[in-house]
Amino acid sequence: MINNHKFSTSTSEVTVSFNLCCTTHRKTFFCYGAIVVKEKKTWEEALEYCREHHDDLASVASETEMLLIQKELSKHNTTDHIWTGLRFLAGDWLWVDGQEMDYEAWGEEGKPSCPHAKIKCGALQVTGGNKAVWDAHDCEERLHFICY
Image (cartoon, rainbow, N blue to C red; front, side, top):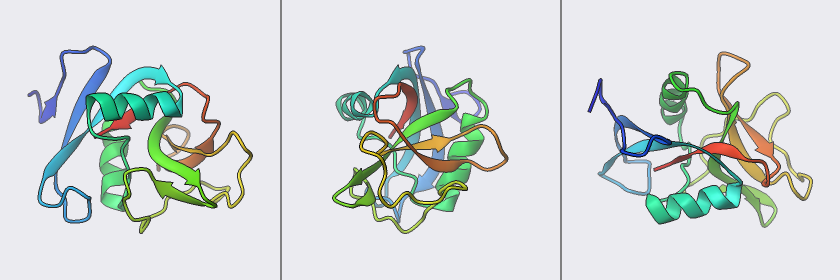
């Protein structure tokens, strides 16, 4: 552990410890960290990777989580957008881990209510401004991603 950041043995993963004891997260009473995976994958590949090697693609369920993730991502050289567990299914946006959608952080274009067929995966835009925002992206685009 270096400066409260754990680094995995893989050069493509950086574990970020948030020290959040999760009363809002589905893993109640457990603290968790996010794993920034610096391998470019499609959304489906990222989901599969996270579920195989960790738990799931990360949800960003509160402003606190958003700010902590944004702060940590600013320290790393990543793609401009980072896959999250946000997905458009059955006519609405949801977190694939079942987390409630109590917090939203869509960009200037707002929440897409009927996105194009390929643009149904949610990414976190981490460049181009002071505040990170959610953005709908083509699910086949290859981006870095966040697991937990």
